[in-house]
Amino acid sequence: MRVSRDWLQTYFEKPLPSVAEIAEAFTFHAFEIEEATGEMLDVKVLPNRAADCFSHRGIARELSAILDTPLKSDPLREPSNVDLRSPHLRVEIEDPKKCSRYMGAVVKGVKVGPPPDWLKGALEAVGQRSINNIVDATNYVMLNIGQPLHAFDAGKLKVENGTWKIGVRSAKESEKITTLSNEEFTLSSSISLITDANADVPIALAGIKGGKAAEITAATTDIIIESANFDGTTTRRAAQALKLFTDASARFQNRPSPELCAYGIRDVLSIIKDVAGGEVEGVVDVYPIPAQPNLAVSVTLGQINGILGSDFSLADVESVFRRLELATQVTDETFTVTPPFERTDLVIPEDLVEEVGRIMGYDTIAPVLLPAPATAPDQMRFRGIEKMKDMLVEQGFTEVSTQSFAEKGDIMLANPLDTTKPALRTSLEGNLNEALERAKRYAPLVLAPNETPKLFEVGTVFPKAGEYLELRTVPSEASLPDEALAKLGAKEGDLSKIVDLEDYGKDYEPKKYQLGAYKSFSVYPFIVRDIAFWVPKATDAMSVAKLIHDTAGSLLHQTPYKFDEFQKGEKTSLAFRLIFQSPERTLTDDEINGIMKGISDALTSSGYEVR
Image (tube, rainbow, N blue to C red; front, top):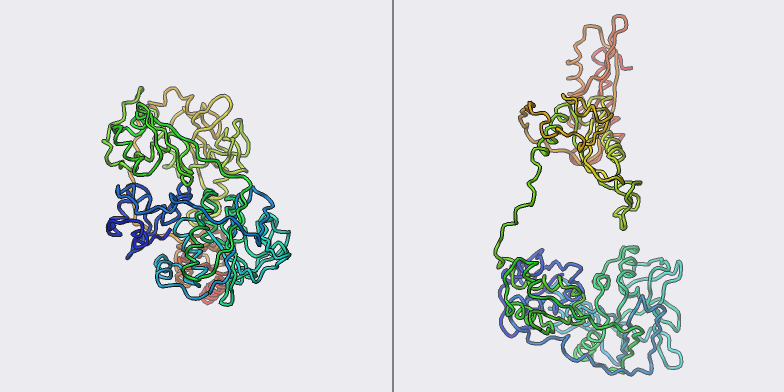
């Protein structure tokens, strides 16, 4: 999230430090800073803190705690009361699980026009484009306290019996909407809409973006303001399906509290009155299932110091909770904290421990050596396994490491990362064979024609009888200079069954290799071509290879490889494999066909007969 230092300063009486110092404070106590330039910081707010820190108020609250400098004022600690009467507006919510709260305000007699300099400047300082005073007011409040808002032109909505009706419902299959950016979308029933319910016409993608049908223009005089709370999962899936990601969707998918709606409508009505005039007719608040207050969380001083490895005092911890303005009761050495509605991340004792650690600063915790393990690591066994690996590498094998997951197995995962592989592997064979097939695609770059990659893996397998370490090779059994692996069966080995593994290869001395110069590789696909031709019996194959190499040009990946030769009478047949690849782009067949024709012509001109 982009944050303006000048905007943050409005929350403090005391002058703030420089942008660089603020960035350092956040880095050591709260968030990573992705960029800090001029008077702007780009703060990386993770999902667990997005509910309260996707806003200048949330960032200011954090900075207040880190610097131990009080806020001048806090909009979320002031009354959120608004005039809850609006006989000319009704709201209907189809599914309270998808829209837990919807507040709508009617404002009549506004004058749409350019925003004042302070409002335009605040938005532009964080990279937002100014549109008009009404839209800018809704964007300012979202960036200030984190509540997305939207304004509709009431004059473009249908009135029945003197009343507007806003609906929140699922889209109909293949229903269409044109957004404010003139993009038309065809919708599915999984996407939620805001509608002009009297006309049954979509006017916004719920939680994502407004529609063209009720756009605010210079001719607008009466508006309806939306301050609502939409389900995070529904919003995220809709944004992904439509490939339409907005500031609003980013906030809703991280589940801000429905309580924030009231603060959003309060603030935006105040600003609109100042910058656009008009009269607030009233506010409707449809809140079918009110959010329950956050539960109190308890943690002891012993738990805090035990988890952090710290020696903080009772006063230290009390200071942290005071700086964070967390309501806290202390009984003996137990802290009972009741988080405010926006701190949805504080639910278990460890969350409170983290708050203490980061605000106090992890650099204030004295480093302590870990206790010695009860049993020393089996270094000799480890060295034996490493020797096995070295021997296989010397024989041309390449080590791979594959996932521990498989299509079938004795142990099933409760929450698999990949639904196609819901079990733990009982053997290395399946994944290793998959790795071999993938390796074959790139074999021409490094292997001779018809040569198969040789792979091996050492990894843990998980049969029902108990896990163990396994060695397996493909495509053929390794030939190790010892009889130990021969006892294990073809192509596999249970290393736990080798009782003398510690002494394995005790007389083995690994070969010493000299590293060559680094050679960059291309990320673009390669193309393979073969060419065969007759030459006189006494022809030097190396000279022919040079001719092909010189004719092929810079796209030839390596020296042509001779993979076949035989004689017939006074002639010799030679066959070469050529690999073409570019470090800059994907090659085309037509391009390579042209090069191959040039090679054929050069061979023919030299008196050779291309087959």
